[in-house]
Length: 113
Image 1 (cartoon, rainbow, N blue to C red):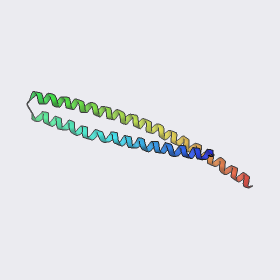
Image 2 (cartoon, rainbow, N blue to C red):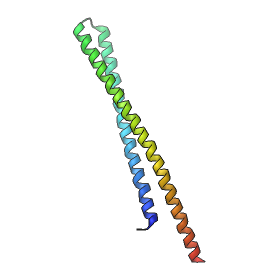
Image 3 (cartoon, rainbow, N blue to C red):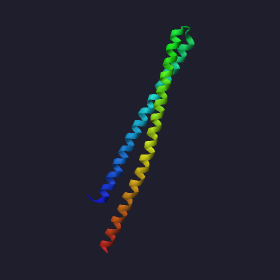
């Protein structure tokens, strides 16, 4: 396999990895909204009730969901960091591919002369 094919395959592979990271990011972000809804629901229940045990239970639920949101946001941040890194790798791979393609064209022109 020619060097240019290796570079082309590297670019394609890295773009596929980037697409997977974007899917992971969307999946993590979609987890956050339902957790906010659960927190709001628990707060509404606390405002309506006078039962100490219900209030204690709902406060625990709020705390648990808040922690889950924080964890999801941390994972989102990690994924965004990996996406930025992957985009940088793609740019470098595309540059190598273009340079190799330019060399190949130059060599072809020299051979034609």
